[in-house]
Amino acid sequence: MALVKSTAIVLHHRDQGETSKIVTLFTRQYGKISLIAKGARVIKSRYGGALEPFTHLDAVFYKKETRDLQFLSQVDIIHPFPVIRSQLGRIALASIPCEMVDRHEAVGHAAPELFTLLLETLTALNEGERGLRNVVRAFQVKFAALSGFRPQLAGCSVCGRENPPEQVVFEYETGGYRCAGCPSSSVAGFRLSGHGVEILRYVQNAPVRLAGRSLVGSELGRNLDECLMHFIGYHMENLHHLASVAYLQQLQSSIKIT
Image 1 (tube, rainbow, N blue to C red):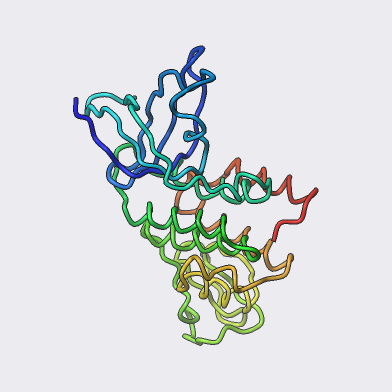
Image 2 (image 1 turned 90 degrees about the vertical axis):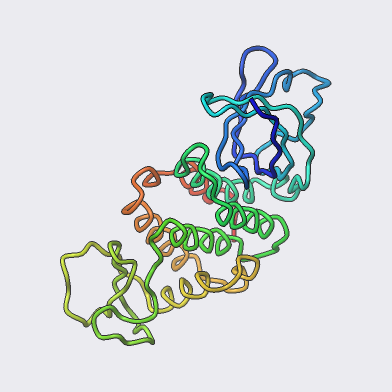
């Protein structure tokens, strides 16, 4: 058993017994890891609020390859992302990338690029003032690319036209699109506006911190969200239905989330 250290992001936690918690971290060096934090629920716990979801921290823990549940020794908060945790809308948005990482990543599989992407996404959601929905869309598009399913948005898959027409069909299998007037195929797809394709191109290529600069209307936003979730779920079945997306939709009916 080795004592190791890694920078990490808290994905979620649950109670264990009367005084402890089991916390799931996504670490830069070791990927997703579940740990038991003994005494984390007592009033004067040494962990304080460090184990709350979304917290960026340095974690020291005992790691044994043959054990699924590791033992947490110490944490030092790097950034608690207080703005996210103070607003229900931002909590709902931040929960989407965290749930995607938690459900898709295998335990112990290091994915430093994905860690950087998640950290950049949480930073943008904490610091941004508008366009936060596009920050999450940027994460989803870039997450798909890191998982081997990069959308092919350079031009129509049939005629090669680079400037999308008013209406296109986004094809789930290839992640490409075809003009509405081009010959149809048997591949499952989603009708999307040409402007929607341009938004997807932008969030695919722009840094996450700039994704919020491209604002979209509510109807196009709903179409983009549905299209992306169908595309991601088509290739990664464990992401077909996300509790965080359902929560965001429920919350959207009572408060405005841009």
